[in-house]
Amino acid sequence: MIKNITYLGDAALYCDFGSEISKEVNQNVINYFYEINKKIELREIDGILNLTPSYNKLIIGIDLEITNYKAVKEKILNLKVSSLSNQNTKKIKIPICTEEGISLDFERLENITKKSKNEILKSFFKKDYYCYMTGFIAGMPFLGDLDVSIQCNRLGTPRLSVPKGAVGITEQFANIYTFPSPGGWNIIGRTPLKIFDKENKENPNLINPGDTIIFQQISKNEFENWK
Image (cartoon, rainbow, N blue to C red; front, side, top):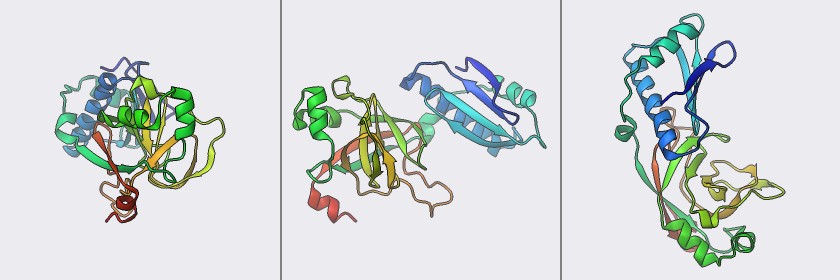
């Protein structure tokens, strides 16, 4: 549940769910996110401009011409929040090619983890992943939790450009680059899927907070001919 609500500048509230990064804590964030959205749609809460969930925080932007910090805080504290996210979230299968020329950092990962590429991939593909948040780049999902045996730090020197669709790992998370971008994550493969669709104005994200991701390995030929 919410530990504390404070000001964030003049026109936002900062809802703190604690310092821990875990699925359980994030589930509370997502539950509040969906419950507040529901209240906005029912016009039971006015003046909220945007909601931004993260690992363990929720930022609520407000329109000061319609409402104020005290009124919104009172509404949030009086919410009766259930596990609504279970009704809104999805299981999504993401194909990923990890063959040479597409994967970029297995030599580094092998040195760090003391595991072979096949062992790293076995650890990576054996479990499902939970989307904690999206951001940094539009629609980029932060997915946890990696098996502890393959967790590693970022590259010492970030790449100037990581290709769209690249799947990277660092610390306890995996992510998917939605646009070509500088980045320092360890790249283990790429997906041919469009993770962010800017033409879809209603919901451009394929993956949203609370979703479960199942990675599936595909060949280079399948990757290059994916439709």
